[in-house]
Picture 1 (cartoon, rainbow, N blue to C red):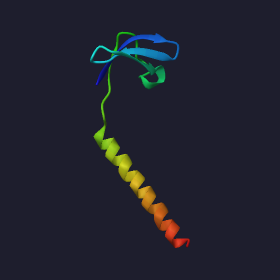
Picture 2: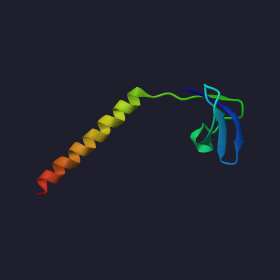
Picture 3: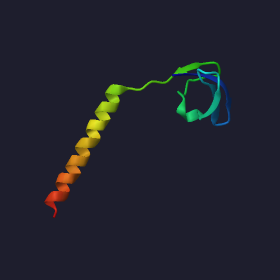
Length: 71
């Protein structure tokens, strides 16, 4: 998905979506170097998502095992 930054208003950015509609996003959600007129691409990082899910699963399993030994 791509956004075109139309303008900044204080801590918000008015951006145009691919279908031509306009939405406001927090300026902090955009790269710090982004300027009016820039095209910003957003994508899903499947590898990082899988890594984080695995890490979370490991933490939950560890907590579960600790809870069983404390009973």
